Length: 377
Image (cartoon, rainbow, N blue to C red; front, side, top):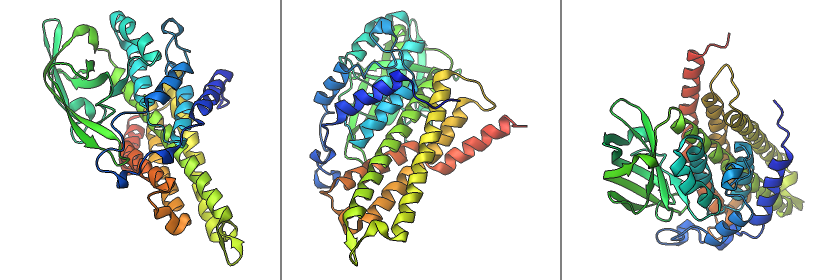
């Protein structure tokens, strides 16, 4: 495969760098310095700028006002967003609209996609299940009643739930089919309880009690949830990569200025070796990310399904981002523990991403199951 980015992908990354250039992560309070969430809403001004730069419609086809690009382009933009800890539901909206475009009804596509691409409709996805440890599609049940579907269940830690217009909810039927329901946040039978993430952002516990959803707003297609889940995972790996790259750059800058015994600490072998190890982590995170994004976007076949590449990307991202921020804290010394210094916010976001991705051991086990089911030789 060729990992050289196309002109369109590079243009998307360049546009993202321009939009995020003025975003200052230290302008938002540290989660340890405020009671409750760091803010009630996401950054609406930044959201408008993303829409004006056509970065909310990257994955949409031209008929919906989009650029018709692939998951690699989205991941390039997400990578830039994480470097400044951009507080916008870019990943969730892009992934949800991609699922609607690929599998939704013509009526749903017409009503939603162009509006989402213009930033007029904000979407999020309930992908964490009831407890954060169980499969999301098992947390909600769906039963058919005439032309409608009745949904019951609980999804925890839904990002941007209190400010998104629509929530995409996976649910399972009595025959174990998995549906995706596109539900307005204020829909009858929908209740939200506030939760606060490790990064200090608002999450929502979504409770569905006999919520009636019309068939137009339900996606009943094989593979729809798996593709949406894989795209969300790839995007989260891209966020981890961008965050890690910015943290390593901060560490390099600090250790190049901080002196001991008359020399910058960056010149000490113990410091240089640790920084080099983290650089290797980031390169591995990057290579596995592009492999997974390419498989999802191209639909290319392989010995293993695309979920195998996604599992490898998750292994490196969850472990790598943790090691990068831990080394950064160590090499910053006491300065790294200062909650008014931006590194503290990066550490909080990294921990949230690590928890969101899940433990590497679980992904290694899933990869082992795939290898057992698809022998290589």
